[in-house]
Image (cartoon, rainbow, N blue to C red):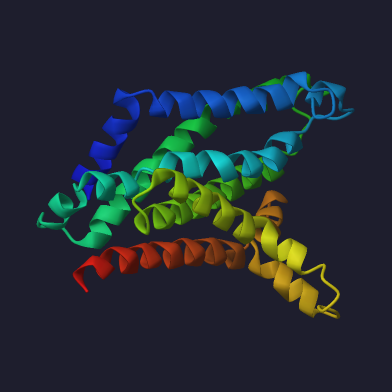
Length: 243
């Protein structure tokens, strides 16, 4: 697994892929946080990073599929997937190596946003007057959400040899898993507590729960389970070539 992991990391940073992904994310969040009047924290009456955590999932919905679309699609297109298969390494180790490499790139994109926290911390009146617990919870929630999106992207890349198709499919699945159940719950066919149950299936419900600063084991189990489901689907997708 480690050999696959380091190979993917080196691929990201030996080309422009890693730098473009990190740069695009920081530019978009920087514009939203400080430039655009409707979302600029400078126009708020209190110190908050809500803009970052509200917009980051929507940015990641497109950015992470762009990162992961080459994971297996490129291997299948070039025929190198068979070389990987002949190595003395289990398919799940290959998936894990690629998964953690892609997730590491997302983490690298998040680390510079700590500068936003320092900025808001200094802008508070008095200095430091902000809800650090909620911000920490939001970062944890964003990390788990990123983990799910990466797992979805890896899965989408494993079922096609076309990177564009992989990107579109991963973006669609990320949208459905994140926002889809929220919109479904508002349909008139769901009433009583059923709409709440439908909404709880989606990521947004659990992401908002963690963002309050309370780490509930049910939310953590939800995210880990969802990651596990898509990684297992990826394993099944790779195993199909042996059928």
